Amino acid sequence: MNARLAKQYRRLLWAYPPGERRVELLDTLIETAPPSRSRPTAREAGNLLWHGMRARLGRPRSRGVVVLAVFVALACGFLGAAGASRAGWETAPALPGGAESAAIGQTVFPGLTVWGGGDAPKFVQQGDGDGVEYGPAYYWVKHTTETKDIETYTAGVRERLIDAGWRIRSATVDPDPDDADAVTLVYEVAFWATRGDLRLAYTDHVVPNAPSYDSGGAAAFALTRAEPVWVRVATGAGAVLGALIGWLLTGWVSRRTEGRAVSGLIVVMTIIGLVFLLPALLMTAGTNVTPVAPQNEPFWLGLVYMPLGPTLLFLYVGAGSLIVAGWPPPAVFRRRSAVLVAALTVAAVAGGVVWYRSPVPAWAGGRVCTPVVPPAEPAHTRLSRFARVFVSQDSTAEQLNLIEAAIGRVYAAGPGNFRRDSLTPEFSAAYCGTAALPQAVGRTLPWFFNVDLASPGAYDALVAEVRGMPGVVGVRHALPYE
Amino acid sequence: MREPTFWILTALATRPLPGYGVIREAARLSGGQVMLPAGTLYAALDRLAAEGLVEPDHEEQVDGRTRRYYRLTSDGVSALDAETVRRPAGALAATRQSAARKRFGLGPATS
Image (cartoon, rainbow over the protein chains, first blue to last red):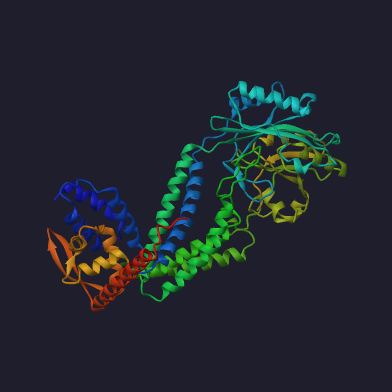
């Protein structure tokens, strides 16, 4: 007997579920192998892998189990790819900061004061709150006479980028020609370019008849990371691994429940889970390609929102099936698992009651705070995309309007949302976090505007825009109040 | 009945055989036309066992490996008998059609 051939056969037989069948097959393979054979043929290997994976599903007469396993594997493959892609992105490098960031800004806008820049979180919620996109760092300049001539200035930007080693990836176009606003007459052009793993989406828009206190548009660009190669590799590996796990778990459940009444229920529940999940996954896998920012959303974008329900349903069905299939547990675990399940149940119920009953988290313990005006900066502000502009209660209505307009002038910041009701939990949290804010003190505290920043670098521009304005008490990074 | 199934039942018709025995017997009986891959054989055996046409007979230990023999059940014998009636009937029908075609002087089909 050829020991090497036997070893290779044994390896191929891992495709089969553990058990006597592997030994039996090895005997048959070795007995029928011609003496000249030193390694399995490709056909033999393919035959063993396919029938081995099929044998893992059990139920030799059923074709339905194969169809079901294929769909479960597809769904799990997609989830695996999404998970691997998300995890892989954590290793992506930071966006340029410091001198490198300044150099890029000066390449595009030489001689002008460039706002924004710096790093950004890997993924951020889109402005409309509908989805997730790759975290951009926005750079922009306030309009000058040159930048308002958008065609000429943009042509110059393209030349400067080419000279600096960038590759222009699109023509200069109006990104939204159907959305021309007849009232404000917004003029806009855009293109995108890449250099190494950086992607730059440029846009220049002008609002010609904007009032003096409003923004007249800006020349700007968003810098994002192109998907690193290893993220693609990880995504592919995640897809294969997910599909394999889905297939093997389907097989395990199928074999464990063969001949048991519960298997019909599991099949029905799995089909329901798939019917909801697969169409949702197909919809989320579509990419959003626009002239300026091709694929600025991860392919698993929708998993976070629309199909979260179907995904959870699918996972619950999967977990339920595994528990049912694995029940009863082997005797060694039985006593221990009963204690564990009981303890977890008690803990969950107790935790739920505490959480439900308590308006402030239990760990806050009714602490009363002495607020500082304006509040201190939170601990981690480097990638913060939320700020508050604190305004004195003595401000006049006109001053508040001007402050609001100033916030609106910051290109990469959302509008300011005014908060003046000191009795709201949000007001209390802005000054005291989880501790309690005494009502009498709250009434005297400065009001504030909540400001969403499109990228963390916009904070300095916000500070510069409102600093020294009558009524402004201070600007602080903050944690968004959920 | 699929081709591998037919040859497995045929090979097992006279005596119980282990897996490699079925493969060799099927090859011999078919004049070398049928070479059952091992994976296909055991998938078919599993299916036939689930359908009650084949069942394990006895086991032998060879070089520390378990060698399991399989035999036809009475249902398996009936299924094979039914197939042996069906196959010649199909061949006969085809032969008649072919002869009729020649008799009417039809040439090769053209499209």
